[in-house]
Image 1 (cartoon, one colour):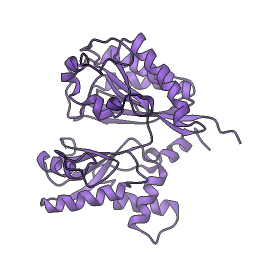
Image 2 (cartoon, one colour):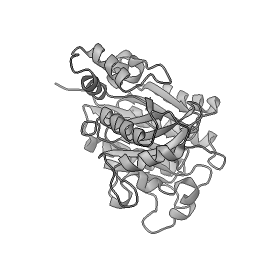
Image 3 (cartoon, rainbow, N blue to C red):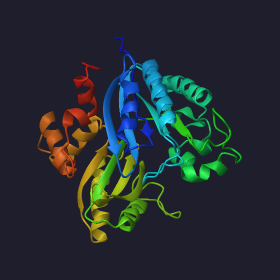
Length: 331
């Protein structure tokens, strides 16, 4: 049986405060035929907006290009400030294979999109994850290390010429990182403290890379600590790069233990973007092993992970497969 190729794109734009700019970028996605906008996550403190959309590969790439073009016209990185690490106006642009196409097959689309952004929009563009052929610049954190402020020097260092676009730093646009990656969870855990140092201590102990040569407790995990004024608390902000091997509930429970050792408590969590159904069902089964039906397991996961701690968690807007069905993208 033939299954039409379906992919997801989750670009992160370095603007989370000016709704006029955010809406203009969003409109470029909405204007692209065949593409469904699934979710927009605006972070005021991070000064960053994550947009999630899906559709056929070429249509999604066209939408990403149009959104990036508008972002380069409206965002000025020389004036941008925020708590989230960033490199450029469209800081990172992941493409994710959902059905009917493999990540390997999707790479060719990402390479064409990266070339188009680099050459037509004059934005230094780097490929990462499945789209990269360079081991020293395969992971996002490798490329983004030093951030926007230090990239004016980094771009001129050996091994850091962009894959496409100008080889000199553009202060207004910065650079972008683009490529095919696997599904991940952007999952932030709320602490009952405003102390960023505590959040950073926890992040260093649990993230895979650890700290100063000491490996962290969990695999497939990136983590930093920060303070979110909008929520009035410090967070351990995590990316789970393989949620089957390192499930969300394991990350959450590990952070609870580490927080308790430092005299603070976890009050709940925040999801950035969408979560795959399998990830939330796994959490529901962990917290409520006697439950079996899907709706009950979802509710159990929301309670167990504290996903409604600061904001209402709307299942049909936050769970990937349910959102795709509601938008008519899949049956």
